[in-house]
Image (cartoon, rainbow, N blue to C red; front, side):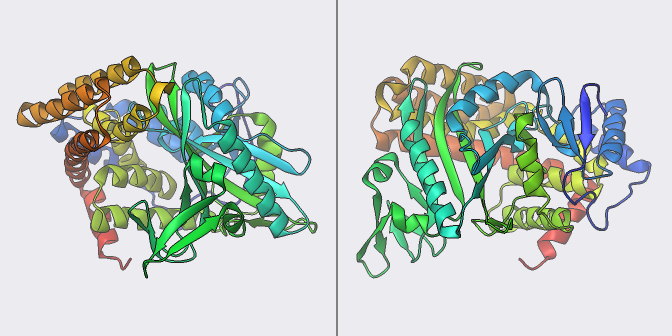
Length: 458
């Protein structure tokens, strides 16, 4: 345990079922693969990290940093460093929800690559995750309270100095159709613009060509998976970022029973919570997790690995999910190898692909975001591309980014900018995809693991 931290029991969990115990040659094998790839992997540091993982991940305990007030699962806290804490807390004022005591209590966290700040030098987004527990007489009343909270947050943060809301996911589509030219399926999340939220309704074209009008009240009956997205001016880093907040809303009935409003209570293995004052509600909620939570978590990640290996190839996403799988099932040497990949210059292109959409959203926001800020960010992306690529690939990527830069400076028409965006995103993701596939396949045990997952039925 690191100085300044205390531990306490949390939820059921601990190690994954069938957790492996790696032999002494595991680190040597990944070191050899790293050397072949030209990835700098310090053997001493790798062994120390593997030992720390083995010690810390032996239980499902919660770790609290008494110096900063942040807390999370022991495994998550190993990858967190507090240097960006003030920045995330500042963003939390925009994306986070306020308590409505005593009936509504919340716990806000950073998640994913944002929480893994020790290893993700090029996080694409600022991902938040928030638990919202609502005490109410009925589920319908709890859903109505959640709907009111999301509606209030959307209107309050629609736009302001350095931020703009661009999408809210709330409710589930009852029928197949299209919205804005994009297909929607049964039970898929409803995506609301700020104008639709203000109007309290959206229009969807059904498969028979008719138009359906869904109201905010319709969405309230079945909230489903809820998420809010903003474009935020990240003052600490002098750039724009996409900041999202995924909500895990639960209803606590008069009998004390806790029911997830979307039907699923999320585990807590990728989150770092920002305020120790929320520990009581966090602990209350995660106690509802079953003894099989770790296994279910790993199974869900492995399904996503299958999807991004077979159905929609994206080896950058595969690597991120495998890192979390290997941390939980004891493949620590392989996890140590993957965590080094996230610090390589080529992974900056993963950020490029994600930030292009953020720049486009900002470019359409009028005076809310300065052209100079967006232009400077494209300049940074150009330098990242130069550092990460060579030869024709470098020239092609830089050419695409220069066209995008000119479009933003001139407030280019949306159609022209969309083409530039697509070119940059496709080139960036191809480079990232090729790199991560080559890197993952270079380690025999990871390659064998991928082949095993690919062979499974979806």
